[in-house]
Amino acid sequence: MLERIEIENLGSIQNTGVSLSPLTVLLGSNASGKTTVMRGIELFAMLRNQPWQEVTYAGKSLAGDHWPNLINGGDTTKRLILRGFVQPDSIEPDCVMKLGIDWKQLLSSIVAQASTEKPAEPEFLDEKLKDPKGGWLMAGTQPNVISTAREFPPITLVRPRHSSITRVTSQLGALPPFREQLADLVQNLESFGTARYFRPNSAAMLYLTFKQQVSPDGSGFVAALATLQNRESERFEGIEQRLSELFPHIRRIRFDISAEGKIQHLVFETRRSARLIPAEMEADGVLTTLFLLWAGATTPPHGTLLIDDPEVALHPHLMGKRVEFLRSLANGELTGHPLRVVVATQSIDFVRWVEPSEIRVVEYSNETGTLVHAIPENETLRTLVDKFQANAGDLWYSGTLGGVPGVGE
Picture 1: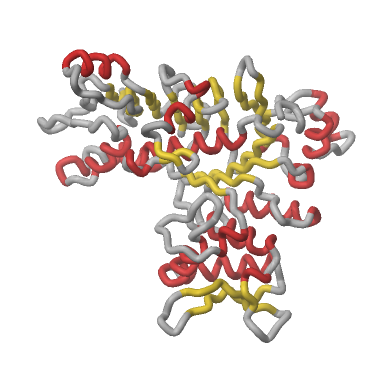
Picture 2 (picture 1 turned 90 degrees about the horizontal axis):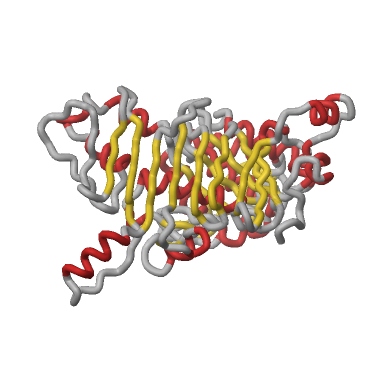
């Protein structure tokens, strides 16, 4: 799984890194860059796993007018750099991606073909992927070929300008001539996992759409939940059981089906009524919990689940259960495999139940941009926690941990 990521020149980030624990809680003031950090983790996964034309940042493609909005300060001469670590305590990244506009190549093409106007589009400029057998797989723009220390059959490994080493290697490893040779490398790539960012909204969640993917706001969720029931009934029943444990009045999750066999509504069978209750009439806390159960259950091994405002619509007395639930997702109690769960919050009631070791403080200044740091283990902190039984929420609110709300707004 992803242990650490370093990000340069993304949005408000100039240069920062974040080490991940099973549950990682990002704390910071408004506009400190918490969401940018999570989106950066998601972007790193997209670039490894998806075709270039499907890669987005905050719903926008990387091409055209969107690139200046994505890069730090809008300076398109800068490179976006992402470094991923999957080995615990490693000081050397396992994967490095550098993206940007190849201005030198663009200038050459303009000089060579003055009548042809080529748009300035970002691409992979330089990549390195650590080989478990030693050395690196590397690719740049000139020549546009992957080089490796391995002994391959005589073949040129051409990497398209808009395709990452990881994606090309995964596709290559599926071919018979390379399947055995690259088995360990492909397995190592899988350890990076996927990443999905969500900020669920109950109204969007219940809007019926049949998109292939669930959007960050939750639209497409009802269709995805129904698909899970049809294809993986055991996993669906696990979600249903856990929802009933958290909210005992819920008995069953059902779908209102039309005469034509199409899904019309998400409904609940409850202990409070003999009739099926439309999801629109159920509490938002129930709906967001159901969404998080689905999101956790459908995150594959080694994956990272990124949630903004995990406390939304939940009573303060239930925050402890929400934190324990997120820890159980991270530990694999629902899926059978561990995950990385990263959340961003400004809820003191939520943070009260978080361990200091799970917290990453996010702070912004004009000089440094967004920076992320763990809470240093020191004698003062141990005294506050052990002797005075201070919880993380109170410590954060007092300003002891940094990332105090109001600063940077």
